[in-house]
Length: 450
Image 1 (cartoon, rainbow, N blue to C red):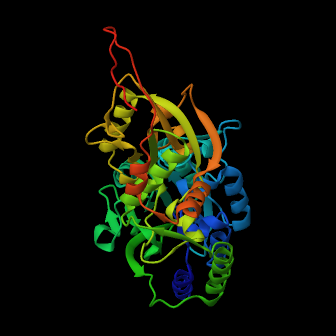
Image 2 (tube, rainbow, N blue to C red):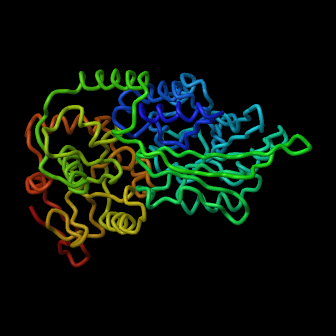
Image 3 (cartoon, rainbow, N blue to C red):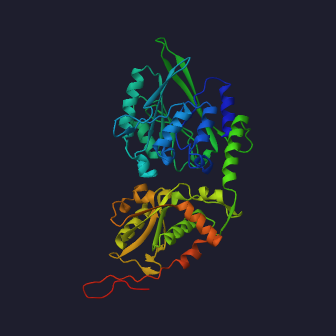
């Protein structure tokens, strides 16, 4: 953020600037998560942010925390298509009108309907995600009645949904799009897309390596309105060669010091190098802790950590991105088979499931064939148990047990016990010596082993 603020201050020297964010600013970076986004909000205030759209990672701490951070921010959070079920009103601003020396700029912000699957469903309790098209149309009408000359929509949704939104929502001039999951690098991003209906869409690659700038030239009309006649967009690269804003750098350094002071002790080492292998490791740890046959997590829970250096306590928040807890339940083989099939068909890799103890190619559990009508002990996380990422198979299970034990703490304890971790070692140790049986009519066992 320190180099970003340096770029913002330079831009401000050339004329009036609106600083907008289309979501996922408060997470999932571990440093930001460590204080629930408070330092990030302070940095955004320092940078003169005009408004932001709270997306799924802003909701990772729950709405009470998010409302507290909005009060800290002072600048508006735009939640055009969020509605409190009890009151029927938005928890934040539905839209915002900015008076400048020239045109009046209208702002609104919408998130994808799928956001409810991208965060722990409990964080959205009492909150309804409305259809973005309908909610935006209402906000556009209100902004036009208030005299807006130019309307900007902040969105957080996938590429196809963004295009549909821009094509079908009348009255919007510019869409600043976040949430494009495939927009990882500059060459994968159309920085500015002009649609046939005149709406323009801008976006930047993910992960904060670039800062987008949009220049809009307006001409005043005889009736005192303003007409946009030119829009240019380009990217600023944000890297080690970019100067830091001194005040922002001091804030970041202070937060880093507090973070590292609390979590500087060495826990051990991880032998698994790839994200998939490290996710398998977490799934195996979950399985062993839950005394289950299968451990299930979503790939998006885990971020790869480097294995070239010792694993420190602070890395716990880096490898396990969210403060999830452990749940257990029983699922029949046919349900497990359906989960694996659905997972393999999901386009977004972060929403795919990782199974410890289950070979999804051979469909075996601890080396034995998966039996459709046999119940299996499952250990999973509260996010999935509540139907997160759309896996409704976990919900409403009568055998559900909530342990309230954090997965991060379990990982710490596993390190303290073993020091060096690999998913293969845990997989070999994890074959449970439990007798399973299921009678058929001919009085034979479907499955039996020790």
